[in-house]
Image 1 (cartoon, rainbow, N blue to C red):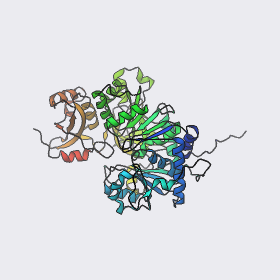
Image 2 (cartoon, helix red, strand yellow):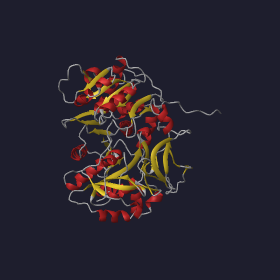
Image 3 (cartoon, rainbow, N blue to C red):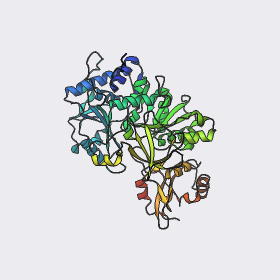
Image 4 (cartoon, rainbow, N blue to C red):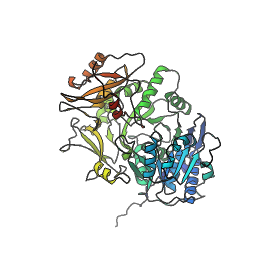
Length: 541
């Protein structure tokens, strides 16, 4: 007998999108507009409009691999671009609307964007860099329903009526074709572009939906707070389509009250965003515990930066479960997710919470290693090294940046993340710092991340960021910038005593600087370069 090979079926996102249209046609996709009104569509309509967009783009001259940029908040039109551009054989390219005009013009030019789809409310932003970009066509999503400025092309007129699966057949893609493109936030040097393939996102979506992943199913109502212009929206538009989950998009309204109102109104069961979002949600619910009726066990996927253990505990008390995940633009982005092994479950509450605060276990197909100065370090939970990863949805290079790519990828094909980690014998990853943020004091390393998370476990501290400052004797010493909770004053002695419960005396910050807010990047991470600049003249009192 001869062995029979499996069918060589292409892994493309078109299958995911068409599956949602066929099996979940009436499942809702809800979009909040700038005036807070809600527009309700379903998968049948959104996929039909995406198909119409694909045909219109091809009719307008789009060639395979051409870039279609977006400058939009989270709503149904942005979703249509995510679904429709790959149908046309193009690559959607999400522009981060929080970047500077100089960065936006560089990114749009470097990516060779031909088309742009933009919210009408963001046209003033376009005017700041349009002269330095090279868009052939600009299509405006008319969210306000007002006449568009002269010379602007209406997205609705461009796409026309929705097209059903029998009305037009898109070109058949290869699973290795690119479908989407994102640039890093550019905290170190110029932003760098990553192109995602059909195969990468199809596999990523299946891993993300798993019970030991982000646990998405057709029974869920998903509200992604993470912007669709950041890290491929964490792959959630495609994972949601794969399983047929209802989607609720918040538009530009990302404040805690607006989000909680949407959670309650639409019966949201899972949401996703960075820790600052959940700290704001936590504060709002604590201040008005009886104002909102939320779904039992509302799941909050947190990524972008480490989730403090204290926040995870408090959210549990408030009836919301934090799912800690880690990833990067270069990893599509899911790299690891917090799941608790049976071997951990019997070790008590404190061990479980400490484990949930780690970046936890690698996602299926994602391989990890920690590499020190002398090579890979053991998985003993103590040895630190730079986290390196590889897998089917981990990028192999940056777009058109060969020199930087050579620096960031090893000769044997692993991506250097820049995160310093330990990995324990169970395989749990714990990020101790970024390579550039580690503090070397007296020849020994101090983890700024661990100090920050411990400080945010103190009742008086809302947020904390720790940086290294120059020291003649020790080379560097830690300095903590803190945002106080309402009603509290700074008490340096109490904070030091709190930290001494976990860390040696030589880890203690030289001081605590009270700030109204800590500088952040466009994606919500602490901007430590700016913090160091702001505190460069700090002297102990």
